[in-house]
Amino acid sequence: MKKQHDFTQGNIWRQLIVFSGPILLANLLQTSYQLIDSLWVGNLLGANALGAVAVSGTLIFTVLAFIIGLNNAALTILSQQKGRKNQDGLKRYLNAFVVLLTVMSVSLGVTGFVFAEQLLRLLGTPSEILGLAKSYLQINFLGMIFLFGYNFISTVLRALGDSKTPLQFVSIAVLLNLVLDPLFISVFDLGVEGAAYATIISQGFAFLYGIFHVLRKKLAPFTVPRLPKWEEIKLILHLGIPSGLQMSVISAGSAAIMSVVTSFGPSVVGGFGAAQRLDSIIMLPAHALGTAVGSMSGQNIGVKNWGRVNKIAKYGVIYNFTVMVFIGLLVVLLAEHAVRLFIQEEEAVSFAATYLKIIALCYPFLGINFILNGVVRAAGAMYQVLILNIISFWILRYPLTFLFSHWFGENGIALGMGVSFMISSIFAYMYFKFGKWREKVLFKERKN
Image (cartoon, rainbow, N blue to C red; front, side):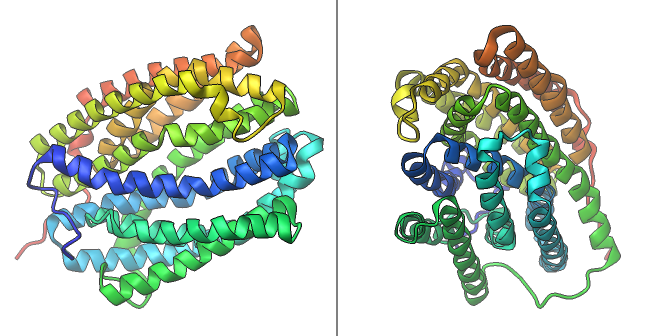
């Protein structure tokens, strides 16, 4: 247990840096799944194949959104129980999460596999890439429980203050994927399907290793699964439903933006796919800080240490803004070279490089959303964050992207998204400063 941090005391700056570092590395490694797939698919199979992977990836995240939302609920509940030092509560809620999330991941995996083509058609996927996208999507749905499983174990450990152990699980998966990807794509000549098979096999092995390692080392109080109590289910659903809807709003908003992108044809779709791969790297520090701030805040909210919670939020925003401005400047300078790692078609490269140059310096504002909404979410104010996400995606990002693309053509995609980042950060700050999220109470005090 010595790897687990108690965030209710100690130097906040140091804890934020030390705790977020392994999360950043784990996220970087996890992102490399898609990057490795994209490098092989884009260079060996072309822009259409890469576009198929990009469209499929959007749908995978959309269908997974509700489970990911429950994962966020797990971080909130378990980090507060950790702060309260309630070992019995940790055991009970861990069991409840395992039962619920297993059922939901299997159900969504089967549903997604059956309706893959219909989902792709709803996005307006170009006919040239529909077949490739369907195959890639279906295979990934088959491995959904593996993707969910080892990510859930990582969430549990981070809620308990351990961000280093999850690095082992991700490292194993990435190393396997690095070996299996070229083998399945090139040697076995499976094309896009080979990339998907390599990914789910790697994730499956990492999931099984994660279970074995955590149980052997007793890193978390997992027990033999049993039927949860109603009070546990009720709290999980009370937080999980709006949290799942948050992720659904985000992913459906991303899918809506993809529908704008697909209207410009295969070259723009391929270029956008390459840009999105780079986006996933650019935003890694902000994502890591958001996760770290959420876990750190959750432990302190559990013991009502509001002064420390405010400091965690303040330091997180400063850290995020400094790092993201620096990264944005690098992206502006290196955009075209980075895009050419994935695709070579000139029209697609031109769109992707311009997109990144326009939007790069707006990312610090998106990072502010991650930090402040992460603190609010750690208090259990899930419906409030849901409303903020609806404003961000459906009142700002999608409408602005649609309008700007209509006015300025394909470059309007980046302009609309960038402006929405800046405006939504203002909404996030206003609610953090003046909202009533601090009044949220998840657990009743037990009488002796």
